[in-house]
Image (tube, rainbow, N blue to C red; front, top):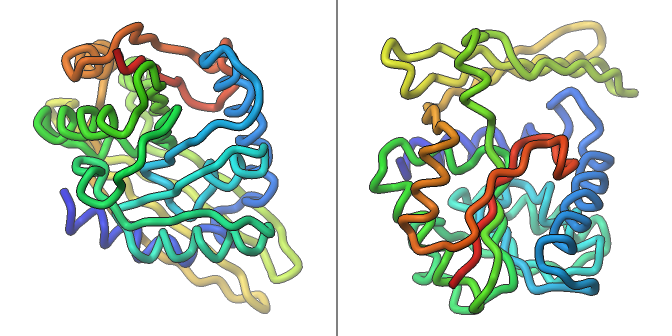
Length: 258
């Protein structure tokens, strides 16, 4: 998993903010508000928390949560993503701690513990086998205080398997510098256990268009599998929260440390 996933995000991260076809800054702020409200409800308290975003990318959720007053440590497998998250946080006037860390072995790099550990945007689906999935969930648990909260968002693969759409996540955004178009093409494996995600970015400059392509493999991680894996990793009160109840754009899985 490590080399191919790192390469995918090292290449994609410099393009992500300005070429995904939507207003990234507004998305970061909006997701921060939504996750803040959800965390307040799950943790049963108001006020700032100490959080780890262990798959931070360029900082979308980490920055959004820091803007809500939380103390956020952002980490990711991709050094390029982490450096971009650091720069983006500074652009918001935030001083956010950032680390390069594999979420299957967080303790090798990060020695603090947190009220909640967050992994959003379907990053958990990079765990293509049960060994990686179990290692990631167990590693996250070591970074939680007693009673601390696991928060993972992922795609609802049970619903996606109903029609196995190939064309997904399309966006068009007109900017002062030109049009930005983004979409994904998914090549489903015959056994429906994984798919190749082809991310296309099309950017316009002075009427000319440039196409960029990025590719990675993801696991079709069904609802019963992620819930069982979290329980097997020692979490209690493991729950599935659909977008209708959480307000977040993807389903969220939560569990308690102890």
